[in-house]
Length: 403
Image (tube, rainbow, N blue to C red):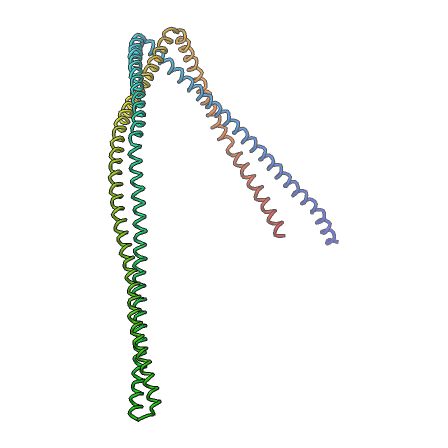
């Protein structure tokens, strides 16, 4: 009985504890929502205050810059009005002086350009005249160069002919030595056969061989003697023939050497003539170029002087424009005193606007500072709540990943 009662009592207490937890969760959620709402509202209000302060400062800067520009303009107008007579006198004199300088420089440029035109025309005529004068000398020089080159080629041909003739002499000499040596070898062979037959004849006579055998050997000796004489005659014939060939080759070589010497003399003469013609032509060219350069230098000098006068003219024109602008400004200021009065009043009004805007900026700055301090706790709570939510989301993601 008591046990059943205890279990029933426990069953009744469980729903009570569940309701308490639910209420606590609801209270916590309600508090968090309130914190987020208050924090967001505080951040929004602070941003609005910062924006109003920034816009007020920008407007103050615009008013100050406009005031500064108008104050400078007023100071300039007052200074011009104060020194009006002096400005008119000074700038009028500057204008007249610059105008005289411009006229003088314009006249100089015109004079220089006229002289330049005349000299350039003279230079062109001089170049044409020099070209006509140099043309025949150039043709003579080129003709001499052609003869010299042709003579040089002839010398080259003669040198090659001499080398060929020398080769022919060498070849004829070698063939002569070979032919004579061959003929002498034939003589030696015939003499050797003759001695052998003579020895056989002596041996046959000493052994008292038959008369027919002896006569046969005697006939052979006679034949070999004839062959020896014929071979010796061939040596003389071959020697004369080979020597004649060598002599002809040497004669040809001498002739070619004579031709080479003559060609070399002609080449030397042609080269010497070309050098003389070239030196003469170069001297004339150098003289013509020196005359032309003298005029070219004078043209350059005049062009430099003209450029210098143009620069001086442009500088005087700049001074003229500057003085005219200052004079026009002084006259404009002097003729519009009402503008100066209007500008003074405008500056006074602008100073009041600047002072008012400056006061507004200070008030907004103080309001921003006060709001920043007043909402610091709420904003920090908002940041903490946001951080907690981020942590919970990360924890849930990690839990899901791990499960």
